[in-house]
Amino acid sequence: MPFRIWKSVGLAAILLFATTSALASQRYLIRYKTNTLVKSTTFLKSFGLEQRQEIPQLNLVVAEALNTKGFLEVGLKQLRASPDVLYVEKSFKVHTFLKPNDPKYNSLDGLIRTNIETAWETTTGSSSIIVAVTDSGVALNHDDLKNRLWKNTREVPNNGKDDDSNGYVDDYEGWDFHSNDNDSTDALRHGTHVSGIIGAEGNNGVGIVGANWNVRIMPLKFLDDYGGGNIENAAAAIIYAADNGARIINASWGGGPESQTVKDAIVYANNKGTLFVAASGNDQNDNDATPTYPASSDIDGIISVAASQSNGQLAGFSNYGGTKVDIAAPGKDVYSTLLNNEYGVLSGTSMASPMVAGIAALILSVEPGLSVRDLKNAVLNSANYNSGYVNKLATSGDIDAVVAIRQLSQGFQVWPARMNIAKGASFTFTAYKANGAVTWSVDNAALASIDANGALTALENGEVKVTAKNAAGAIASTLKVTISDGTGSGGGGAPGCGKSSSQSSEGIPTAMVGLALPFALGAILRRRKK
Image 1 (cartoon, rainbow, N blue to C red):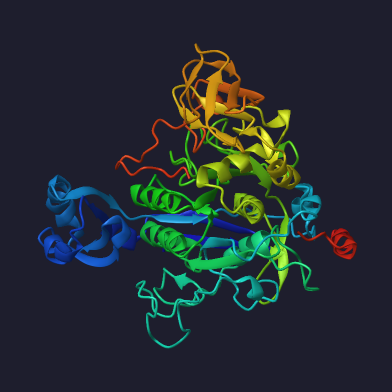
Image 2 (cartoon, rainbow, N blue to C red; image 1 turned 90 degrees about the vertical axis):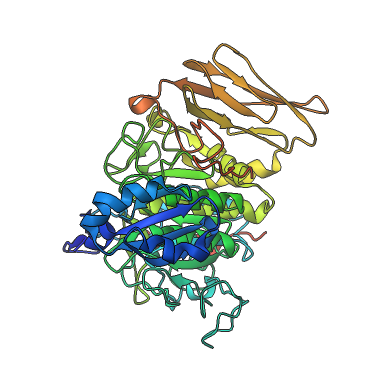
């Protein structure tokens, strides 16, 4: 049994521990250099493998060893040596990031702490923006979620046909990649809680409200009812989200070593215009020293999120990292939707990540044309600086929804204005509303260089200022860019904060890619805290 769960007295204390599963130890992911899927079944049998699954977008198949011992002794080495094979990796499990919590009723303290109410005076979101929840599913009939669910309008529901020819029959309301069917219903409650944080329906007189009142939630289930899921199913869910129009993917899960397959799937999604928002983990771990995946993967289009318990103070369980973890969001005692039309408090970076995803979707509701890189930089630029996060987070700040929205109306800027980058790494800045060609420069060429696209390469430790000058001669600059060693809490290559390359190891290019809040609702939110 790959996972064990203990439930404490009270609302939902869940601890998840991963062990090696028999299934994962026998399943292998094989990516071909070219599209050789047609001959794949026969080819794999020659190495003692039986094909089980395909991810055609990556030219990748999942296969099971018929004789594990024999395959490990002979077949694996021969398969990796084949000129047709790009890589082979063993399947493993990832798991949700939940922590024990106090069952007190704290309602929406965390969300309100992001200054969300003032942001709602400008926008409460847009139904044209889709956020995919790759998780344990969603309570599809929850009163606060059922009207916010994404529908695949190319599919006729429950007719037993693959109407849109995407390989999934009757995927009208998402997909269950764990059971390989169209029932994305949650039985664990993790994905339901995450979904409510992102987009519980607002101003409907029921329950709570999410960060984004009007966003569409795409339920993609790949975790089982105990919180574990295979990496191949995670990758398939990520690809499905990107292929079906999700602009943001929330990933409140992780674990194990870095998976090249999951990494490739994220790059694929980035290239489709999809930002990947990931929980940093709950091990009180310095991710600069010991990375947690997929949040720590070296990909431009990832935001790694820590959990805070108050502004300037990380939750005791949260992972951190001066360059590997980007930003903090409320993650302790977060009140949201649960199964059976209920609500309750859960804690974890699992709860912080969807807070960021929901606010990122608010940004897109105002500026839907932002590329993946620019959307990420807009989120990072929204960090409200706090000295308590220095050497703990790349932005040294908590996400601030007001800053996230108001910056969109403030003209020519460099995003992000404050950043910690690892020595030897690179980071590409955004010149927002430059209105023409931009000339980039740094104030100390001994510490960093910057190219014509705003890609800074960190050369030596220290502090530099990045300046952008547009065609009209207007100037915008950063406040503070810190370059550090890349060891311990001060360094390492971060997702988006310390890139050694703009490509994955397979050479796949990474993409560059108004309603006022009614006073009555604000009063209701404040009353529910008591």
